[in-house]
Image 1: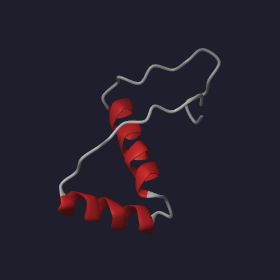
Image 2: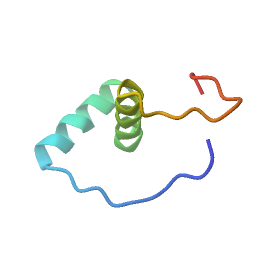
Image 3: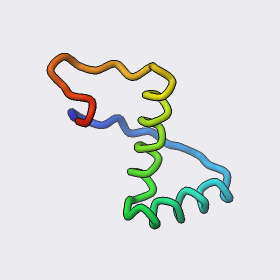
Image 4: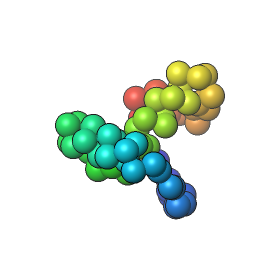
Length: 58
């Protein structure tokens, strides 16, 4: 996967607590959970661009 872009994300406290519990349930960090959810959302929306030579599971 190459380098990751860093940026500040502000979330409503209740939303953060919900994502925090969800991430614990799935044994992920909050950061990894947010990245997973965003990735799934862009794929579902048909906006995910595959790089040549990569399979969808990578």
